[in-house]
Length: 270
Figure 1 (cartoon, helix red, strand yellow):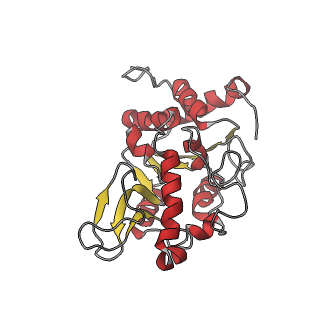
Figure 2 (spheres, rainbow, N blue to C red):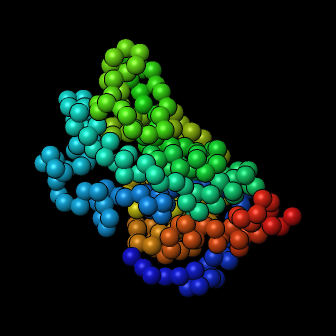
């Protein structure tokens, strides 16, 4: 991790703002680091919910939150889903989410691919969002397939029953060991086929090939790339601009450098 400040990256912020102002189609790829600025805990690491090797039930959290365990023991998976949701319940989108939404509102051609399941991008006002791992706020019945939206899990029986058929509900998220949803994958493929001319990786460790791949493709094709992450990732030495900063401070600064105003209700360049 780093203690770098905006002043340490002043020249890079200016260069990043210039890219934002001239790009035609912008792709953001976001991960847990962006929502961490809203106070959301990660599963592991500093401030994580599950610091130890095992949960209180003696399972790694990745196993407890797997599709295999959910099929056999939905009560176990729901136990930890409910803990995660409760720890996030009072959190809200941060300045990074709002900066991306502001850019989309003014620019138009901005797509967000997020690994996060908190729904913060949509809450902040972004519209072209691909929730690759789904969302905790939509529950789907594994028996009848009907779904419902919930603001939070307060008052739900754990595990909850479907109000229509009595079957078991599950959050419409990708559990460990499950395949990515086809609609989200197809949307992402269409975005890549359209040819973004600026790709930003924000708050993600880029561990999955489908997350790192677009950045590597862009870099090899001469498309400008930006990484915003206080820590090192496999992409850190491959991007054009590397900002060792928190997303909630870097993104608003980049909008300012691009001539957009996040605080006022209009484009500062008007």
